[in-house]
Image 1: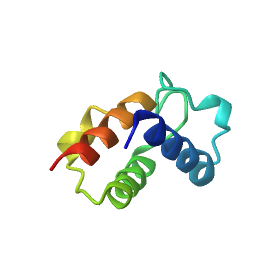
Image 2 (image 1 turned 135 degrees about the vertical axis):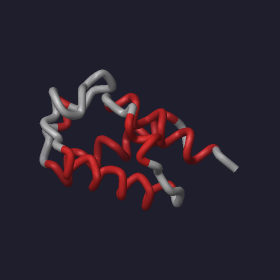
Image 3 (image 1 turned 120 degrees about the vertical axis):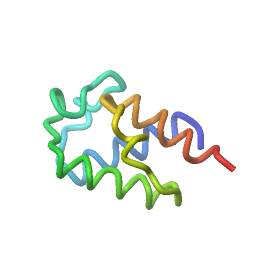
Length: 82
């Protein structure tokens, strides 16, 4: 998956599921501070990433995710693992 594809999927999920305006979803946007996600939303997001990638996302992997770009990087690492 390319970075553009990952970003596009993440934007679609955030706007559809959490009703975040698309213009607020930028690579540097902080998930909690800028987009207003909470810990329950983070769990939902982690489950969605697992569904999209077909790979398990460990809490350790998700622990350092702070921005939309961090999500893109995580999705790419999951989809490029063998």
